[in-house]
Amino acid sequence: MRILLLTHSFNSLAQRLFVELEERAHRVSVELDINDAVTREAVELFDPDVVLAPLLKRPIPEPLWRTRRCLIVHPGIRGDRGPSALDWALLEGRREWGVTVLQAQAQLDAGPVWASVPCALRADTKSSVYRREIADAAVRAVLEALARIESGDFQPRCADPADPAVSGRERPVCRLADRRIDWAGDDTETVLRKIRSADGFPGVADELFGRRVRLFDARSAAGLGGAAGSMLARCDGALARATRDGAIWIGHVRAEDAAAASGITGLKLPAERVFQAESAALPAAPGYAPIRYAEDGPVGVLRFELYNGALSTQRCRQLRAAYARCLERPTRVLVLAGGADYWSTGIHLGLIEAADSPADESWRNINAIDDLTRDIILTSDRLVIAALRGGAGAGGVFLALAADEVWAVPGIVLNPHYKDMGNLYGSEYWTYLLPRRVGAQGAQRLMQRRLPMGVAEARRVGLVDRLLPAEAPDVLTAISAAARALAADPSLASRIAAKRLRREADERTKPLEAYRREELARMERNFYGFDPSYHVARYNFIYKVEKSRTPLHLARHRTVFARRRAPLRAVAAGADGGPANPETRHV
Image (cartoon, helix red, strand yellow):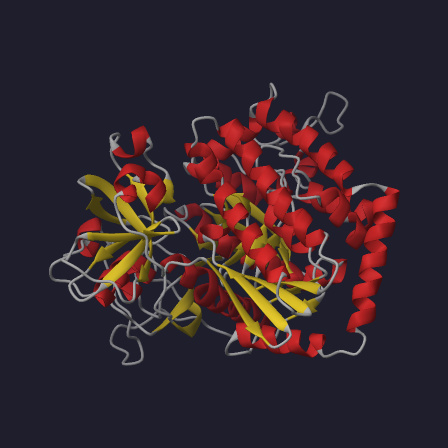
């Protein structure tokens, strides 16, 4: 089928649907929902069988849904209506929820239902549940709806509120006041639910040290307690605050007033970074611990839970020091297990934006992640496995490729490119690591295409070596079991010897340092050169500046189909009828 993804932004769910639909041979193009005229133009150019909307912030234009089948992906159970479906579900502590695919009509979220798929809800952040349980259910629901459309023998019906099986209802927008924390009255579980229900966006409005902030990234702080609302301790960038019956760690905050953090406002940053002076007066305490290590016989597992997958300069150095300690242990296989939501997304753009000199901090950050990547590449006495339980992007993908094998869980999305960040060239030794897996031409194609990739495709092209069992109740247990089997393989010693010989041969052909020097020469121009594209793109990304047009690598209908509509879009062709600059096609 020809499917137009109409979405407010190309977010995690839109990317997941994109790769899942393409994997099933559907022709997919993307249009960002900018205005009605642009949407009508996209439909005219692409002529889709279905317009699929995974994320919208305004209604689909009536002329469109009256003439085209438009399906809305709603993160709520059958009968649920309103823009804050998942927020309310998490705030109320629901354990069962679902995703409904319904046809657009005048009344929002009330159209005929094409599919409704249930899912369990973890007690976790909204962004984490959205990326995992909601995304999984959305894929199943969309595929079920498309199969029913293709069959032609299914008649969708609107959810009937009188039907006992319909438990959803219309709900208002979940506002800041609905999540206001009563530090004296709320217990730890309630505080966690409130912050988690707003994680990602919009955060919970509160005060820290007398300043207005939004709270994110909350975890239980076992063993800590004090006067309700008081600040107790600091750990790895997080701050502990007492609740009525315990305490929580607050990992990230966004300052709302100019007084906070020397004028830094609007940036979601580690709490300790925003309140440096105040944090220094607090005692250090264990517990937040984003980096952990455990051993299982001959297998070592180094875990790193990175908020939004970002590796700051400091976190790179901490992880590198932890990696060095791992190499002192008598293990035969070392597993690098990133977080359940993200393995890594590369350098920390938020902390770079907050720096006095973003260019200088960019340089420090890329060198720090390069140091870590080099240490992994040069490990010669054991096998290193990058186990991807969550997605990876940009430098995070190439950091994973530094390992001897890459294992991945089905359903995650990879973005093995840098160009969306203002044509950033990238480092992490990608010019060495990527061609040795996919060849020089394959590396060039991947770096230029700027599209997300599912793990099935990543396995086919050579970026992923093993698919982990999707049905495993505990992915970390499955990873450890597979690593133990690898450690027990009689051929392991010869594999380690072969990798050592290959590294020596590669070094003779071209020293590893030469790759880094060449990459960083290009990165230096990105950071310090006359072209500000990287700095503009980073600012727009961090501050969520809405795009004024759909990038052409997503809006395929504007590069392929526009040529067939030259009379309607004369600007899309040159004077001789041939293609003009593709950037002029979207007007």
